[in-house]
Length: 106
Image 1: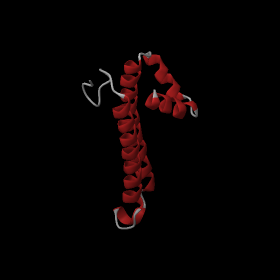
Image 2: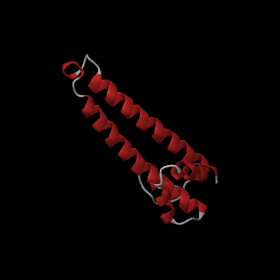
Image 3: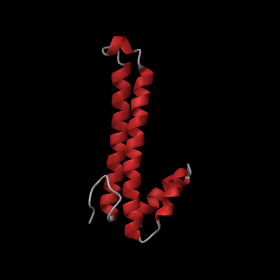
């Protein structure tokens, strides 16, 4: 079915794609919260003076998770018989949510 979680080769079913999208969103939120808590909490790193470093790690974590999500979307589009160029819809701010919902449901 699918070769690797980090690869865009193969195909992926509707349930597995939805589960991977939810897991990636939860992972992104966890990384963001953990980085923000770690770098702004007064018990760590000289009483929380590194808040921007927490934001930096949150952004890097979100970028990595979004790239993995795009690999999963490519698999799902291949499974639906659509072209890979449709991933460009993820660049449009409001339509990306509806396109992701379409990929989860179809």
